[in-house]
Length: 203
Picture 1 (cartoon, rainbow, N blue to C red):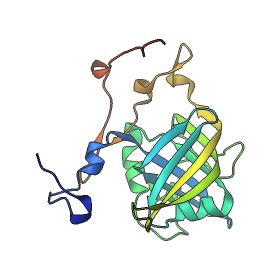
Picture 2 (tube, helix red, strand yellow):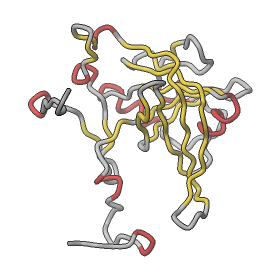
Picture 3 (cartoon, rainbow, N blue to C red):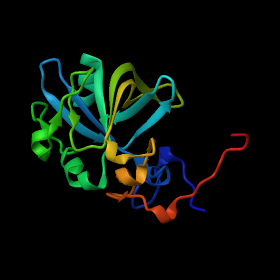
Picture 4 (cartoon, one colour):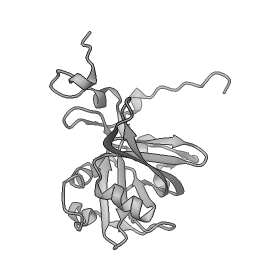
């Protein structure tokens, strides 16, 4: 076994943590500043945390434009990153000035949202319009603050492309999501032959 204390370093070519906790959906988050500047950025630390109400969250290492905009306006949109949008998603990860519109940078068409100001990615087959519930600065076990912020928001409106709805069920394979899987630049997609169906006991 290769065992290590993270505080002393992992001693490997690449930190294995984000390879082990994988694959992960990508938090492709669009925001708009109070001044009206649109931002779009991917976050690999993203997930769903609650059903009712639906709460999603993403963590930002460093106080980035997305966090600043959400704190300022209280709104964001999560867009499903797909295999077909991989190159555009990657382009929006570029470290650019706050006044750069990543939709334009990546050649993406924005679509107007209904209940919040930030636009959606028009080509994404699923999107959540979200209102901020809280921003939490993370701490270590000793209670010291670290340079990472967890942004949680309630999904107040969900958009689904009807082409990925099969008999009223969202077909994840049809949506073909792009999943982050650690390593310096590893991503994965899903395949039907890897599907495993199980019913929970008592369900």
